[in-house]
Structures are given as C-alpha cells and as structure tokens.
Length: 90
Image (cartoon, rainbow, N blue to C red):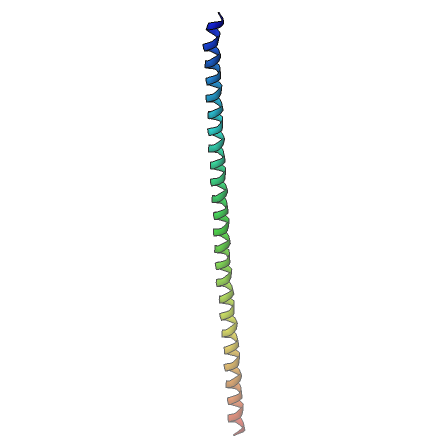
C-alpha cells in the first residue's frame, strides 16, 4: 500500500509545482500588463501636456500680434493727427 502512495505523492508534488509555475507566469503577465498600462498613461499625459503647451504658446503669440498691431495703429493714428495739426498751423 505504501508503494502505491509514493507515485500519488509524486504526482501531487508535480501538480503543485505546475500550479506554482502557472501562478508565477500569471503574476509576470499581470506585472507586464500593469507596466504597459503605466507607460501608456505616462505617454498620454506627456502628449496632453505638449498639446496644451503648444496651444497656449499659439494663443500667447496671437495676443502678442494683436498687441503689436494695436500699438502700430495707435502710432500711425498719432502721426496722422500730428501731421494734420502741422498742416493746420501752416
């Protein structure tokens, strides 16, 4: 009877070893998926930050152009008024 239990015990040990291997592989796969998800989220966050920086930069450049155009218009209007005043004096 003892001889019959030895192969059964060996089979149980082999099954336990396979089960541990399967658990290790599942853990490795889960860790890999988690790392991939974290990398994807980090890249997405960086992409959003870059897009926001580009958009804000474009808006800032637009506002600068508007400010420069307003200053130019003011200077031209002032010069025109000065010229008109000079013509009246003459």
